[in-house]
Length: 205
Image 1 (cartoon, rainbow, N blue to C red):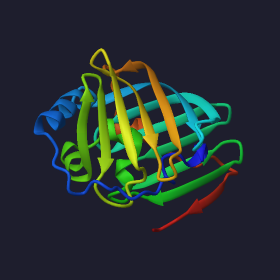
Image 2 (tube, rainbow, N blue to C red; image 1 turned 120 degrees about the horizontal axis):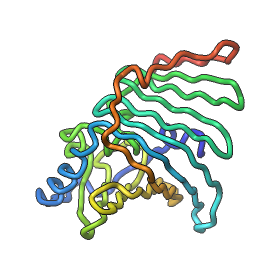
Image 3 (tube, rainbow, N blue to C red; image 1 turned 90 degrees about the horizontal axis):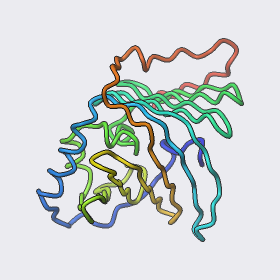
């Protein structure tokens, strides 16, 4: 599941009728506005239903709001996921395979893109609650977003990490470090060309 973390979660959200506090939403949006462009490092742990650790990984990421993000696993295996305005690319360096899928409205809201994404879409797609000064909980308001619940943790006005729970009550705990919101990024930093010799799998839908 680690390899397809951002593409494979499917869930149904149960809180369609809940009203959310505009103060909670506004507080989150103010926080996210700091991240027009950002890069950093991550460490990630996946737990099963019994809360037993299944896998660990680490790597780097970068975001250019609102249409681009890259998530690169460097250890223990090597995976690269890049999302642009049109396509989601997944490059498995170990297996030498490249998968390309079109970006859909729901695919745009994969977990990492939440803090680099469109403010209007966040309000349309999630019930947002500020659980405490440093914690925001986002629950999808429709099917297909890809997870049951996402919790954002704030550390000194910056994102410290997130916890993502799927519909099978498994969860992934992600910690962010070395955040750099001053870095200059452009669409060219998210360009991807499949390396020669890789097996290509392109999906139109």
